[in-house]
Length: 565
Image (tube, one colour):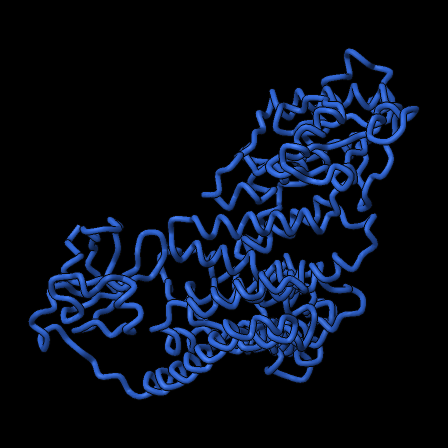
């Protein structure tokens, strides 16, 4: 009896630490235990501390917390606890920086690149940090509680744009450094879409599937009529990272495929050109064009050429002002351009001869010899960017228009680094927005060194940039001082309050919400003159309100121009 009691007492003293190490590690690997639980357990005793150092354990916890990031690492040669700590530390640093930005840049509608120096430093520490920072910022933007932490999300979106551009700039430079036969039009068009939609991480998610689907539909169309066609017998699409320089089939077989593609492209899916409509940037984004069916001629040409290549037919773009053709070799026995047939993308894929294309060249007063050669990929990308510049100039929402302008001009500086016209325009846009003054001065110095005749306008802009920098420093110093809280009780002539939904009743007719006010206009003299404030009955001697308009832009409106919505 005493032995039984002794065994019972001894069994009661046994704890989890008495289990085999393998079983304890198995328990720690349970999904119900978070990484915080593991950290607490590791502080209990030396046994738990030792087991909690297991690399496999931290690999599982990393996958449990950030499963979509695990593929970025070499599973066998990664210190998973170290990587977990790095990712968690980044989360804290980003959160702290966003909180700082809400205080530092609350009164700034536009933010200079200097504000993101912390993110640039973090990205430079390790290549993988680009992906980790993007993931954290994206998770903040797409948090379940969409109505909470809106200010943090506002700055997170700006940071995400900056970090994505850092990442994409590297991708662009690597892409352009490849041999010409590996610079595909599709990949370049996709990079442009990503560059101009940096906060839409998944913008290309379905693009490649839809392109393959178009090619598959074209094959299905000929399967019954031409069951012995070599493309049908192959039963696989031609997918390659290189430019298809020569068709895989005979000219007659290629023509069958192209006719089928025309049916799918223009009749089934009803793809059409946006022609001269420069009001929508999305007509230049291949992911949007492939889904919506409308795009600028260049993008339609790239899409058609890509699908044709999937089918094994080599086509090459011939760009004439306002028009685009794709040429393919139909008559190899003939010489020169007579050997080619030209596919008219703007006319339902009609097959044209060189004489027809030449008429467009003559009408456009261009060199026919130059236009007979395929357009280099980089030149097409540059034309797409200039199209976006035109969109930015004509777009209705002021903030959205300048954003489109900046994106296009910054990308042009990568694609065409020797183009001083682009750099001068970029400097002007920056100066208008009062951002990136350091970069403005650098751009102006480069322009002056390249073109000595431009010293007049460049010198004037250089002096203006220096003045703006000094003004910004003074304002930043003033804002760092303790702000005096102002109330409407002290300003009886201030009629409206923060949070009220208003409508601009005079000219712009937008709806907005008030988020701040000044008892009198505190904008610069130049802004007051440009906006015609002196034409108002009360001029600048009336309350002005900081408002967030329904198009997402921040505006500064006079009291007499607002009414309760």
